[in-house]
Image (spheres, helix red, strand yellow):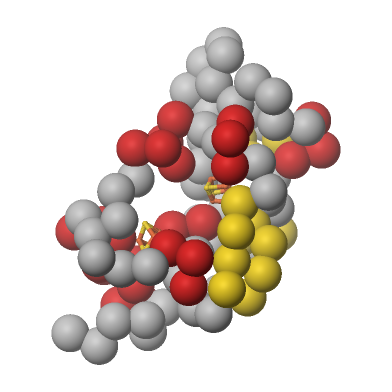
Length: 91
Ligand code: SF4
Ligand code: SF4
């Protein structure tokens, strides 16, 4: 199983992700992390992601993170594809 705290690829691949899915999703996240119904990104990277990609990262809003973040599964095909894209998996 890949180590999310040494990765962060799924938090940094698209300025369109993660989007909030409706009322209540992301409740508790400070407004300055949110823009146009999604997490505000710096480039393709979610503004709530702290640390260095591929080394040590954490989510500043982990307890309140959006549903799509909760549902993104470490070790899934999408996870593996992103890790390969970022060069974190060789296979
Ligand atoms: S891409 Fe996979 S391993 Fe990396 S942070 Fe996301 S779920 Fe975790
Ligand atoms: S809210 Fe947290 S888990 Fe979701 S993309 Fe941003 S940093 Fe990653």
